Length: 224
Image (tube, rainbow, N blue to C red; front, side):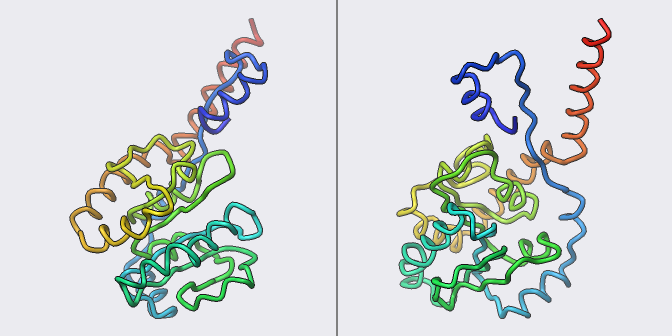
């Protein structure tokens, strides 16, 4: 399974915990290292992005992602705009919802190299209220070196510490937390530094080694 929460769910329904291994999904850190400042600036110019640009991505036909973008439109942006006039949201992914009308939300549709677009943003927000598994998008934001604000549900499966690698907050506090990050470059830098250090163990190369180790152990048991 991908995270300890999934292991716990299986144990609750009767699966022997000794038969369960936790191996998380990961992120290709090398792909994020290769994104150049020129590429980042090209995307910002294409969509006329200024500081602060927020980002959220996912398949919007998936209900938790659809609900999240509606929360951004109806609850987060109205409060933010009272303090920040030029804020925009870069929303990346398949099936952009037609009932989201706020012009501050820029739907790109699916993109070929996601890492380029994430790097073009300033702050990631994850107002997820449902769903399960490990949140790949948070690992991708960590790898991109942009600060992340998430709900507790949105960060499920990732043992990052609130206030150290990530900001965990209820939806009603998102505007306030975003403004605090916008105003404090030092706070943004601290979160980014810690989050990038955290995500190193989620590199696909290291996760691949974990799978190989489990396969080797299984083969050894079969031989015995």
